Image (cartoon, rainbow over all chains, first blue to last red; front, side):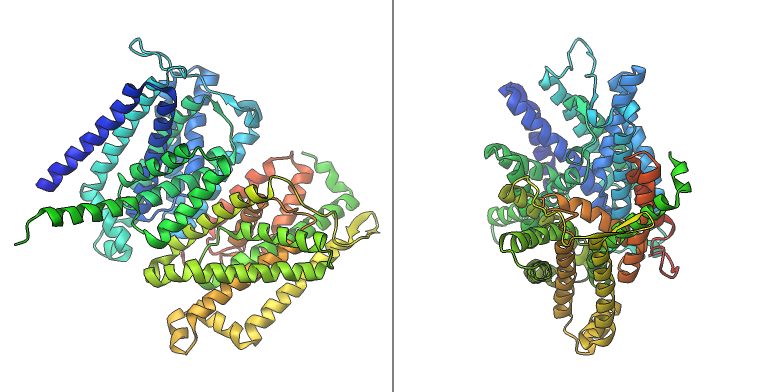
Length: 324
Length: 301
């Protein structure tokens, strides 16, 4: 019981920290850093929800984001539909893509899922840049900002309000994922991850569980993507933004944070985004740093920062408890 | 759409020659990737970066030092052989030793890490400037209106030579047989006294040397540039998937097929869409024939 109480205390502290710091500092730069930390955290957590719990390698997460972002932006641009609704619509679009991708690929072995999602994402990106009359392609699509709600302005000139929108989205996604992972379904996920054949012999429909996992994750990726579109204000279907480069950033944060632990991604996001802000490195060195971190974690720190924290906590408990 | 172009035999001939020329290049690019996947089961995401390094080696050796092209290509292949061996020994072997059977996912994430580092280091060190040459050898000929450069003929002959040498190596030498045995059943190979660890290192180095030589050979088409690898990687993936993952010979046929599709699509349809069409074809192959177009249909992997 004690352990779970500590967990809730930690969770509340982190929530308080994330909620309070940008408001107290009231500094646009710091808010922007926190926005990108939260964005990468939640995307890495979603990536880890698929990879760390079911070994599903979604190498097209960038393209899924692009679909969510463009759906929301195009609905607002062509049909004047409110971006608030667009957040959900973006999620629904990627949910359909995820359902389609899941049905066609999840029967296959790991690497085939990775390659299929990669090429589906490439297809989405190529289609977005080729449909120039509709999406404006490489010229860039202007995204209207979120309209006012309850008298609060959510335009891009008020980043603090946008930060809290993202904060709420992240909390909702995280709590949902946490509940799924700690429910009976989550136990089945882990059983499938550790021994797929064994789980299917026990009568669990492996493909159906994978599809459930993949569809939930896809929906949320779309929501985050739609928010991202509103946040940056202009969408261009470049690989840096939504292609393999973005996917590898998310993957690195998930790995550095530690696989199979959703909260580890927050550590990973703070570590990598924090480092690059502290040293204010140029773009190329930033990516070299990401790659080097990834290799380093794989070689000497396979459980990531979260694993390190767990070991530290276990060590402290051992020291604090009197020896009998 | 310009279907009327298909009525002119000279234009169709040119499409076919262009398609073959490109296709052979794509096939050559895919072979190293297919070799490594076929034997080790590892997808090498750094494949394109290896190509990029090879183009820089070739440029340096051939242009700065001024040695003849064949020697430059050999240097590129040798350099990448050593680099591949070092990478496999230094980073992949410990990973495999620690994780046992489940090393593959971490293995390809490792190559992703390497790819990010190499590509961005190249951007910092070499700068975003192309270093290229206009052609390896001079001359062209014209057969009833269809233009054929000597360089294309050279690349074509090199491709045939590489395929033949690799086939002979795999079938006739004892090292080749050991490699094939390892790919079929590592445990049984080990029981037969084959040093599987060494075979994996040699295989990875050979695959790297293959892409290294290809990078040197194609310098005039693909000039040395830090991000040249991403295009090469995607093309190699396509070829390897359509041919069947791990099937080295089918990669060459798939390459030629891809080259022909591209050349006709670019000639007839409007530019840009051929990428979407090809991505859709790849997804369809992955879904309906995951073992590739040219392999015997087996149960789903």
